[in-house]
Image (cartoon, rainbow, N blue to C red; front, side, top):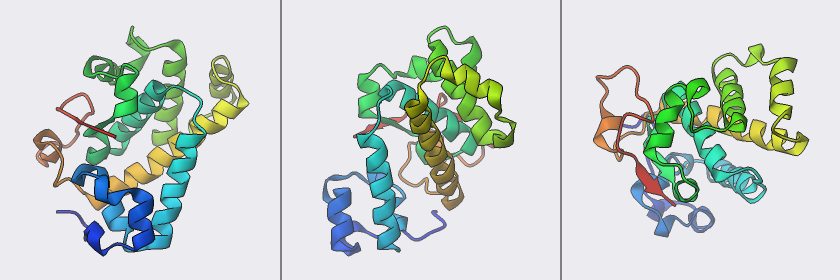
Length: 197
């Protein structure tokens, strides 16, 4: 059971409901927004931030999804690991590719740019103070300054909100594999995910 009570969209602030397109969303897509709905102004700000990232995204959706899933693994955010976004699936993110996230440096189907971004995300999620100039030198081999800002913002978004999702423990709507609390560690490559919009 989630640690924060979920609010049914019928009881949300009307502007929030419209901004989130709540009437068109599945239970899984509503996600933690049902908890953020307790504080509508904060919820709207989160939507605005996520929307800004989506509108100004120049990197591939594939890279975005791979980074999100790797951070979800470190966060142990089951709801993050249980979903795949349609635009990333359309760019070739299938479960074979997701399995590459188990050992990214050795994965033959990841590009060097993807490996660099994932290595950065790994450090950001597990020991952010270990990130140094050498890491940025490697990133600059693949990304320009604006893309580094984009990538850093996305990783920060995933780390922060993924950890919040894990702490709030919202797992009721997830596929069974991701609900199993007997397992200490769940992975994005260990279950049957759901594709969302």
